[in-house]
Each structure stands twice: as C-alpha cells, then as structure tokens.
Image 1: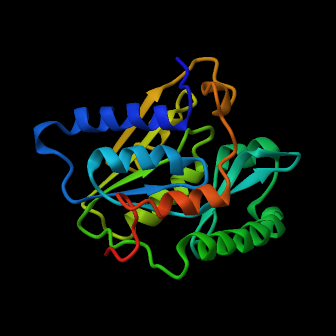
Image 2: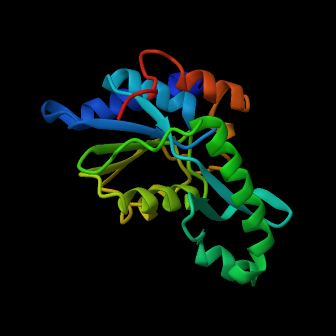
Length: 221
C-alpha cells in the first residue's frame, strides 16, 4: 500500500477517524499537525471533522551522521525526550547531545514564531485532540508531542498517522488514548517510500495552509 501524496493520505486517515468515532463522533475536536510534513495531511483531517487546524512545533534530535533517524525530540520549553534504546545502541549519553539540543531548540523557536505569529496554542483542556503527522519512524517526536499535550489535560488524545514502522504505533499506546495507523509495512525503511509523491513541505506551504479560511485557527480559541 502506498499513498499518492499527503492529501490522499489525509483523506484516508480522516475516513478511518470518522469510522472509528462512530455515532458518538469526536467531542469538540481540535486537530494539531506536526510540521512540516504533517500539515497537508492534517488539513484534510480538519476539513473532514469540520474543525480548525493548528500546529504543534516539535524538533527531532538526530543520530550523528544520520540526522533523519531520531534519537530524541523537543517540544516547547519541555526537557528533551530521548529514546533510551537507541542511546544504548549508540553507546552515548543525553549530555553528549547538548549542542544539538541547543541548535534544535533555536530552530524550534524560529518556526514557532514563523508559523504561529504570536498566536497561542489552542485551548485543549477538556477537548478531543487529534495529533497528526505524515508517518512514524522511531516515533520519538510523536512521543515528545503527546507528553506535552497530555500535560494540558485534554479529554481525549488521539495520534493519527497514515504509515508507521512496525511496532512504532504500539510503543506509543501508553502515551495516547488511541493510536491510528493505516499502514504498517513489514519492510519499512522510511516514511517517504510509502508515498508516490513526497515533496518536502515548505515553510510557505505551512503558513498558507494555516490561513485557509475553512480551517484557519486565526481568531479562534
């Protein structure tokens, strides 16, 4: 199974969410995307749920020489979250990543300023929060994001992704109330290989999507 692009993946993910919700629906939902790749996927989910879209900015802490492989992640001003198994495999400690943590913290703040333009994160206490990304590899970025959101006391916390590495979704079930993953290829190598078209999402595309009238968070609580 491969998705044509982010939009198709988002439409299929939205259909699964609506099916899973059943007659009860999703009470007072808010859709949050992990930028940048999660934004076009989450836009389709927000449209289907009839709610607004916003972003939760997170930054991956990459393995030396393999920056695409996440050993940790940052959200907001929270302490970094590390994958202890990967750290052990590398024979490294969290302290050794301090320079990279500082670099990623600076980039996180830059992107928050660019995407949010001073707008606070939507109020999520007592609401159904749907966190969306375009896929999970190690899952460490999603783990950091879920922990950040859990502290804000949502009524229900759902992680929804089109594709994930085997075991990645199951490892996050203790962090979320529900984890939805459409496709778990046994030969998973990367998220991008599960899409026919997988262009890098730009900052401008994120900003433009957040300004889409039907799903724009501007001026909303």
